[in-house]
Amino acid sequence: MTRVSRLKRLAAFGMWPTLVVVCGATSSSNASPGIDVEPPDELGRTTSAPAQKGSRNVTLGLGVAARPHFQGSEGYQGEPVPLIDIELGRFFAKSGEGIGLNVIETSAFRAGVAVNWMQGYDDDEAPDGLSEVKDALGARVFAAVRLKGTVATLAGTKAVTESERGLLINASLAYPFAVTKRLMVVPSLGATWADEDYMVSYFGVEASEAATSSFNRYTPRASLRDASFRLSAKYLISDKISVVALAGVTHLLGDAADSPFVERQTQPLGFIGLTYTF
Image 1 (cartoon, rainbow, N blue to C red):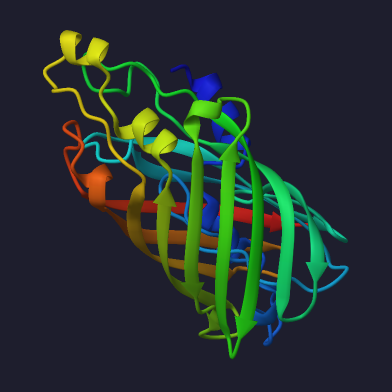
Image 2 (spheres, rainbow, N blue to C red):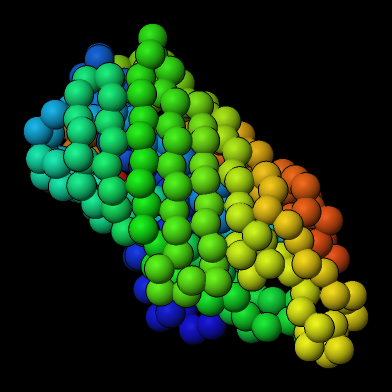
């Protein structure tokens, strides 16, 4: 895949959703109630926290991420990652959440719809003999509730442009808290369930692929795909400029973990970047 196509995929908000966890924090001492936390995707996410009603925010940035070629791959690569966190009333455009609308917004509850990206992998990333898995534009619905500082989120994303990519359902718990007036930290736990269409398209081996590769034919069923832990942080250098970072681990489960081309069931992830709030 070319560098241009990678940047297009990243800019489509599907690559590092967990980064919204730290992009939305403000410099005030009560920053945590307004922070956004997003649910795990292909590489694992956190969740979408209830936002301040009618809020307006424009934060842009750029960072560098280390990610596996595909879930279960031993190979890693470094990539530039654009960070986008825009809120204009009920409208939002955010890395990980996509482009959408908050249909319901209160201080403790948030629900809405969005279009987001479901990431696949390309020929040069796939194991030898296996075909690429196409990226897909997905329709996403979500709901998040905040209770005593903890944010719980449930979200579903259904592939629209490539229907065989199927359905993902994400659930997560996050606890944003301010360590100091300048440092915000967000630990989170997440899990992802995938339907059979998704599992077959991403982790399956078709008969034609078995004939051209070293893998046996494999048809996974719908099941929990993975569980993840993330630790995100945001440090305010000034009122406008912040450093954001992420470290975490994702563990494949069920039929995803049993796929014959999965090389590592447990994969670490990392990211560091810089943002500017206008």
